[in-house]
Image 1 (cartoon, rainbow, N blue to C red):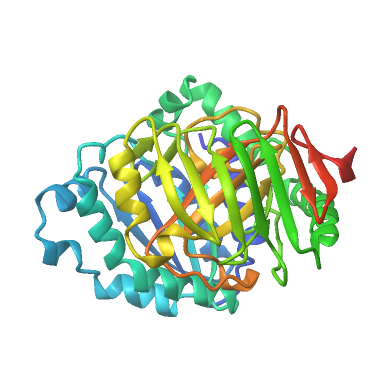
Image 2 (tube, helix red, strand yellow):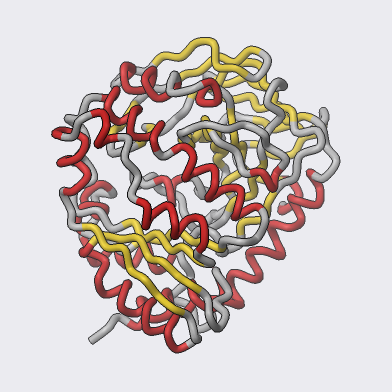
Length: 369
């Protein structure tokens, strides 16, 4: 029997998040582990008149390419995949790993080469998204691997996931619409502001936001959601930041990341674990050492770190920054082969000021007090 929360999640994504229309061409990216959600989504999409193409990966395929492929094979991007990114109307990506550490033994240089090869496809994706030509959503199907990372039983983890997606509510759409209304208060306040100053443990950094737009994330592009983000000014970031939680990218975990910025560029960085990988990623291209995203986490229903960025970046009272490509709709002009989110916990001993006025203290937004 299908978990009713899974059915609600499928309907929520198809009907609310990506606003499916008759004739839409939809491609779904997932592993075979997510088959129950793939089927539920496909049924809902078909019932709404869309055409569905699932692109399903067998777990273990990525390590085969990265460990055994030649440089030419690592740089090969299949034409059907490029065609889908360039022409389809909707893309659903379902996180559904069965082993979140399967790439831990891969040479960082080979991962960097693969990321570089995907650069143009990624930029096309972001540009079409900014123009409204490609609607998309990233979600998760709970697996044992994610539950283990979160140090939870699978049953408890399923409760956590569906609860964070508000699929334990009778009307998830209404619940997400209320989230959007509340977050809009912060977006409206930030409109027209020029600078954000963060001060916390190991962190003292100013971020220029003049002329940039904050986006209200209310369950459309991510499920779960709960953040507002922008693309910071490329040359107006100065100071240093300590990223509280491990930064995870491409299956690799980097701990104790600290970064120093001068005029928008990361000029120095250190890590307590996997610093070599951090360096390889941040030197992938010129845009990799600049920030493409700056965001406030606003989902106070998520309060624990589970080693999955889809959830962790939304933790209420945190901020996150992404190295690499920015979203054009924010005003960002930064381009890179990577987009790597890292989280700074500001829930204790911190202040956030905007144009000299207190915006948040110890992770609490003053507009919501």
